Length: 139
Image (tube, rainbow, N blue to C red; front, side, top):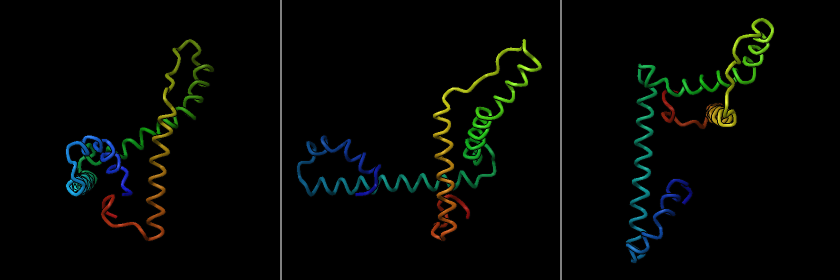
């Protein structure tokens, strides 16, 4: 089929589906109907994403950039600012409490690299001229 979400859904319901619908034609018709409904749900979510991205309120349209800024700041803190702040603390304020360190940097790097990869892929599509209009928002 080629669409992983639909394949996963069909794999989960395959055994109960064979018990409930023994007729192969009816089962194929049901699977087709299920595929159509899953695709419609995906298209509906894309429309919601477009409306959210075009919204004037930062609390609606700004959650994606917010995630990017949080990841960027956390990465900067973990790899650059923490070491500088720790040096300043040890040099000038040796009696002050220990600076907070970040845990879970593997997850942070995974999220950040995923976002950068998707952004890079989108840029590559635009450069090659294969980007479709209206997928991410106004181009």
